[in-house]
Length: 414
Image 1 (cartoon, rainbow, N blue to C red):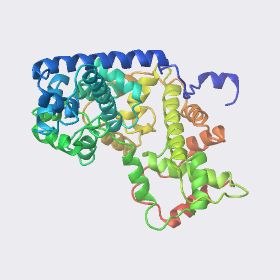
Image 2: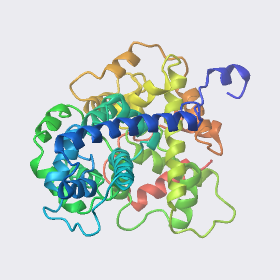
Image 3: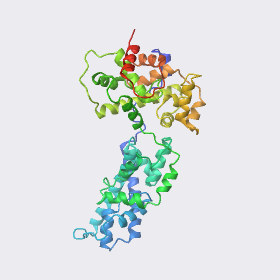
Image 4: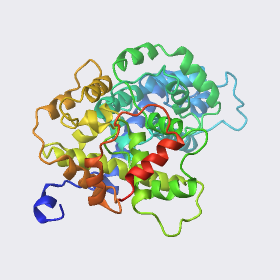
């Protein structure tokens, strides 16, 4: 598979900056968003009649951030009236002329940082410049921006009432970042008085966000209690080759399978003493797995764009058996049943689009592209192994010591 003909089939996706705007473009978009916020503050000033009213002006400059669930002007007014001191200490707050303008500019900047922080906190893989773009498209409306992100990224389901979403939503109000004088009070006020919360639930009812946490929780469950692979062996191999693509029907099982196979076939002469994984190493591993998954789908279907490939993966929780309609062997009833469980009853437009395409490459070629994109030390060997794997593809429960030992023996070179 190393000849020129084979390499022309592979679509290897690597990190690149072509989609990231230049610094000047980012600065222009930031300035445009700041201008929208500034206009909203000018309107709020007029409606609250803060000029010439020291108490109202002091409350406005202290607590009038635009963070909230309404439009910008309504948020500013609500925060000024509901989350500030009724009788602020005016001894150090009587401002005039240029001082008021400076405070107002600072308030606009704090609000912008708070809006961006909300989206970045609530959607952890969202870049700051992307948050700015979504806010621009949504006219700086937080809920509209969140809805755009959910739709644009093909998230299958989403709810502010889920156990994970409620605390994240409260924290993501970003009062701390906006330097509100009483951040907890702001959060409580919006969680209790918002008349739009029910609209949010209805708006996003049909979309469900599948967090990477699901896979990490499953991985923790599979390897819980007594570790069946010695950490000094498992961690180096995990970091080198423990990617989440493969023939198993969930990412966590693929991580374990790839790790054990690599340790069995390419053992290190001297194992470094490692008993923990640093966040940067884990982030690198996650990123490489991501590019491997996207490369797999783009190699299989050349007419699929990177964005469409990501939508496929998001809608199927990163499970190739569901993202690739031609992945499972014909007649594998158990695999088809699992795919139906992942996809659910309703049709997913992007999956339907893929179903209408004819594969451009074999499964093995797609695995080689994935391994190459993920910087696997031995991409061709891994592709051959994953394609030829004939073990149980449907894993439930944690691995026992005997099962891991059997895997190590079975995966070792004969």
